[in-house]
Image 1: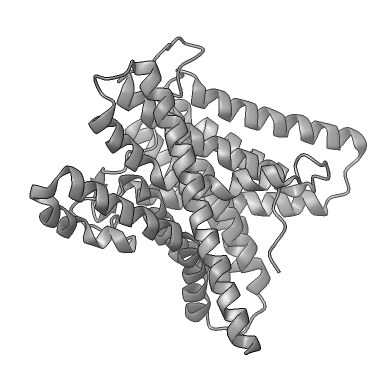
Image 2 (image 1 turned 90 degrees about the vertical axis):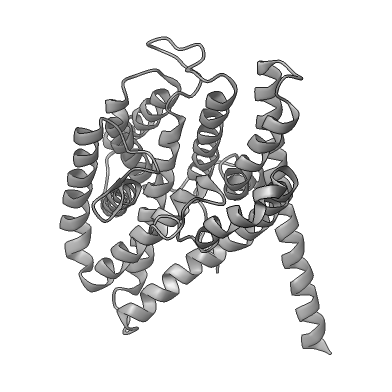
Length: 358
């Protein structure tokens, strides 16, 4: 049975996906923090939306480990199966986007197509943040590659030392890693920075995923607590503050240093929001759940539209029109990819049913 989704988390999933998209489009089209003032910008810190996805990944990782903590399944086998489930949930959308990217590369850059794809080949298998890939076939998938590497470290720790990881390794490790990155680089590092033996974004993923693990710990403690009405109201107030501050940071022109504050605020928001069962019709509506479901394909396909925009729109439309066209085109392409894969799944299920009954 599929676990029930939290409607507020699904809305936030969509918002933070769009924040990353609009950050990229703003950089592409305007090349600056458009309308930037100390209080407002056009998603100048939209890249911080990725931290939300790392947090949720860490939260769900801890939740999966909690179900398996008394299992006799070998840790290595269970870790392999856990990562395999993650890859299976991502791969269909990933491979559709890869096919579309290959078509675009072949159409726009036929002279260097084969050489370009050869350099990018490891990234087809999410290996671009191991150092094996000279460049990425889809640069925004760095998040997935780093996430999978971090989860491969965190999940077996949870299985081996569940209580110790939840209560000690997760809070201390997350604070130390995030603090180190902010202290040295003044913000969460970019995807291409390399230090020692690995990409800094792998440390970024590990630190924030550990924070997501601790958020699960806090969420479970809140859920188990018997709160008075006054305490519950304060909890809702804190939850609202966490989300308002983190979302404000994304649209503001605050110093990048405060990205750490926004990340910890998100963690608090994830912990509190996930501790509450939202019973309102809106949060449990099909529309809200649909927003969450299209998030991944929308996120994955954005580079396709960015490349096509460079080829087809530059010099032909105004900057504002280009920005809006790219945003809506990316959203529509993401929906199309989601519906395509669901149509394929329905067709396969129908054929399987026919074969079973024959």
